[in-house]
Length: 265
Ligand SMILES: C[S@@+](CC[C@H](N)C(=O)[O-])C[C@H]1O[C@@H](n2cnc3c(N)ncnc32)[C@H](O)[C@@H]1O
Image 1 (cartoon, rainbow, N blue to C red):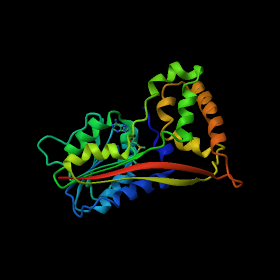
Image 2 (image 1 turned 60 degrees about the vertical axis):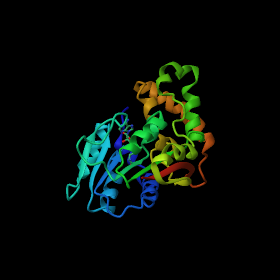
Image 3 (image 1 turned 180 degrees about the horizontal axis):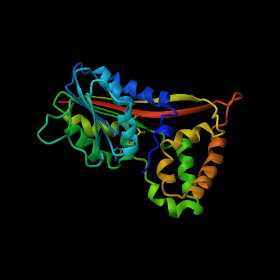
């Protein structure tokens, strides 16, 4: 899947807010090692390094483009290491202490089989450490339903079948059930943000501009340029009906996100 750092960062402020909300609920004063899974362009990784100045921080991602952007931004004290790896197989380096914090903002919904994934990631946390995860839970919202409906149209269905997958994010109670046996506490909650998106300067619908940086990516990766354009036009028609602009051109975009912070026994 091809990620476009510039497109993703168009809404950097809105995307950073849940990362900060998640970080605020991690009750560790001085972890020695922190891992940021699906670190993308590294904005949040740098925030982790600021919060814990004594920690060695590793940002992990499987997008060379996102990591290149992360590395370009640099870090003054060199405490952040960038690791190119697939989270489907990621594990802490053999022979090194387990990380005290395994953090992930807006990344684990790209992976399937959450019971196995969360068991594996929680086992990778040091005793007394934290697994802290935020994932969009937007799969029943018009922005994502429209994507599925468009892709299932006869015109697109065959080509886009590989990008169609069941909603990956489970209920909060299920994350609790998977993590609680190994945890001292599991703090899980949902927040719905009302993003007020500015009118696009390029004429693009702001919700389409948003999903172009994330949920649209796997669909567009399967199409050539002309087909991608036609698919987005089709998708935009549904989005425009679901998210009409206010009189001044701004668009209200409710967005649900799910959070889990589990402390390991
Ligand atoms: C929406 S971005 C979030 C980036 C960053 N955590 C943030 O909050 O700004 C999702 C990131 O997850 C990464 N990602 C998705 N699936 C992955 C996988 N299987 N292995 C590693 N990284 C993955 C993508 O490359 C992308 O950089």
